[in-house]
Image (cartoon, rainbow, N blue to C red; front, side):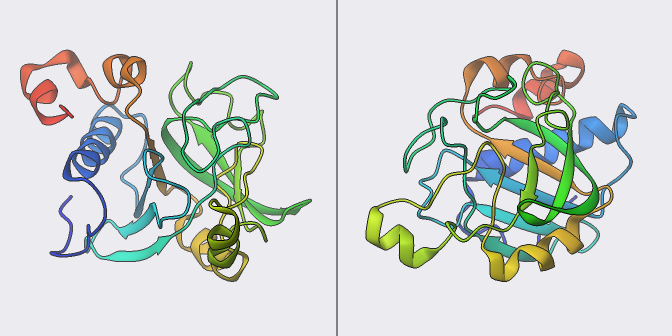
Amino acid sequence: MTLAAGDTSGIPPSVIQLAIAAVSCAVNSGAIEAPRTLTVIDYSLPSTTERMWVFDVPSGRMLFKELVAHGRNTGENLATSFSDVMNSRQSSLGLFVTRDTYVGSNGYSLRMNGLEPGFNGNAFDRAIVMHGAPYVDAALAKRQGRIGRSWGCPALREAIARDIIDTIRGGGVIFSYYPDQNWLSTSRFLNCGQSASATKNTEV
């Protein structure tokens, strides 16, 4: 997978390299089918910045660049803590694959399967889904120094949520990043085969 020139604006090169390496590992190992879309979330950036990017994999074009919320117990403006535990109200890291949509208490929503036990394997049971939320709002961020927080879901602006969900549903891949050393060193998709080349390509 290659990305069009200029389309990675705002993503640290190391993060997009990790995302591409993780997706390649997942496809090559048979964990997932080759995805149509890649969504990258960089939780090391403040919630007041657009820290989610959606790419069309076949063309490498960036389709969306958006605000995204993290969990209530993950941090204030800056994310600091992540969990895969039920009722933790924290965001989870790692590689997810998107499933079907439904209409629930948060409106039109997208189910997600976590592919990394110990980091996001409970996402489906925790109802970690993508949905729109009124608290994901640039004006609100300016007033209070952060956007609102979810119960662990990657919540989006209401005005754009349906468009993004319909673009990435049904087999798209989501890569949620934070420089957590335990995840970086033990993720099966970031240490594919433990080969020297994989280690070199996924250094941060």
